[in-house]
Image (cartoon, rainbow, N blue to C red; front, top):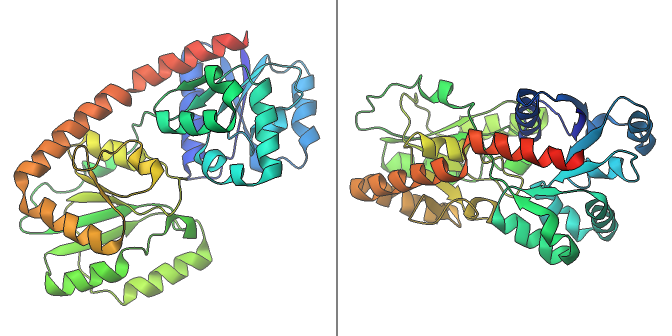
Length: 320
């Protein structure tokens, strides 16, 4: 089949990597899949004109509102992939909610990344429950980075936050409490790594970091996730879990959907709790070992690249 895949394709974002991954799965099955940046569509008629030609047999879109609304009334069949913004933000806007409901009604199928996301969507649009499938995301792209970090950590404890530097990612959430902790315990270090997606906010981050006690991060102890909304790309967490690295994540639904507290990771509700949980992890190697073992088993079961590939390859057959 000739497939059109609509998504917001800004570089270094979860949407872009998810779209590229799905495109790869479909190419492996012999389909032709063309990516189109929904955020660059100048009008709703642009995609309508594209799909009314004979270029494509079917379409997919990531996000019901950002991508799916361009496919309303399309002459070709399409499927939809939920984004966190759909369920946690756009649904609060009555007009966007109406549009998303209409898109979901037309779609042959919809994909949710977690069971929690499916249940939230089904609560909003009960008639669509049977067409919503759960397919956890699979990830491959972090291992080349992590394997380059020296294994000999000595007495250092380095916490690494990887995210695009923009306000919604909230990279400064733990800076103040971590700075205080570092003054009392120089063995703990915080590293923030990510592209300067928002230049103005990046300057704020740099200015804030200048006031922290600086040191060289030479090892990796844990990954943090301090995202302030559900628009979390869970790649960092699941890759860390697969690599036997314990994960501490902010206790929001998007994170809690894949991390079970004190079972496959640790969830914190505020910076102070983060410090308490981090200390408990540092001082209890048995707990750490049990958490990383269960986390790796979880990732192997739910975030398999092969399972995701087969799922999308089978789903697009519904568009024939």
